[in-house]
Length: 91
Image (cartoon, rainbow, N blue to C red; front, side, top):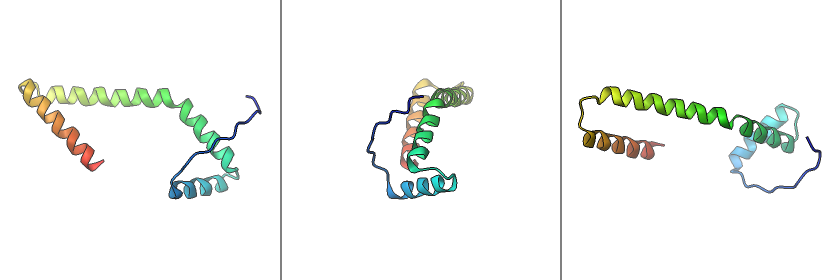
């Protein structure tokens, strides 16, 4: 990996920055080292996280299909829209 560096400015909520600073200090790292490693980890695990999300989605779809086997499609769509709306209100 190249030792060349580029300066990047980002904005982070204060509470998240304090948490990151404490974690960096616990690991005896600079903030730059900490954020580089966090970004590297995020990028390296992106495919696995996407695969895991898809697997969870397919599992949910299978459960819905099983529970709504004799339910008219229009009612299933309404139930799905209601569940999504409820999740958005709470999440």
